[in-house]
Length: 444
Image (cartoon, rainbow, N blue to C red; front, side, top):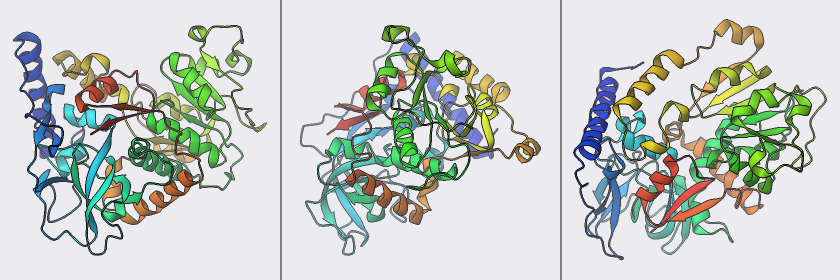
């Protein structure tokens, strides 16, 4: 369950601090600590000072000679706030941020449920993986100049008006791509591309397996929409998207990135042949499944409930069932555990009851995969998270070049619905509610 004493202590601290906030806000009803007084043109960032409620996401005024930093710039790292060097590292740029995106991982960081945050940075932490902005200063070998519009992955430190970033993690914003859309791309695109790579699919090369079907859980989210979009580009068919709410079905239908859309509660029951087709006379609120959205071209040998790859960020709730519906040679790609953590009601804090539920799911509900069964059935399960890219810089660069190429070809630039907000706390609340579609981006 815990690999080290430090990991156990980090988790225990997270529990205690969340319980403190629950007592402070719910029982004693004290007012939260106010933000620093920030003027419109001030240099500032958002810091999470410790695990806990949404009130731990606070604006912190920075001096004009300060900026935030990601965790992979030794010896300057981990930050989160540093004095800007008079001479920048030769392969870095100082970025004036105009937009940053908010990912579900940021909410988990705030709750104290993201081990990489503690491992690489600690508290306080400036979250944020991806940004867009304008180059303010550039190192001698950066390849950028002041005024260039760029976007990229910061690997923490993105919730800031200024951030120091290695050039390997940045690219120029392609012509015609709005900065808010550029800020929405890096994390979800790198996650989706790497997940497809782990599943055995290659860009612009049709899968060689007999079964080419893929199923994507949480298909209306940022990573989900990108997975569906790229899976089609990679030659997968059918691409089946799973959503948690009926209202999200129409969104995916309008986007045309799935061959089928299935409501999560009806997934395995209604994937059975004719039962999956919905009469066109039904109202949207009555839909459980939408079929034939974009002329699916399913192969005759593809079973109705077996897939070459299933992409699952839900966690305990769906993993076992997902694995059982892999075709021979199929792969289950795991990149999150959303159902293991609370949602809507926990936007403010995690209550004692919610911690107990999470502990139960972790101890009793987590599936076990039998290596012998994997061998006999030629199936596999692989997991990863974005921290993987910190040291794998060549992989990061290769994927980034691929992503920019797809943007320039018009494949993915506007594939993700983007909602622009003005405040990081508001974004955390919306994201925790599970009601959002696509990506949330904060404009500075």
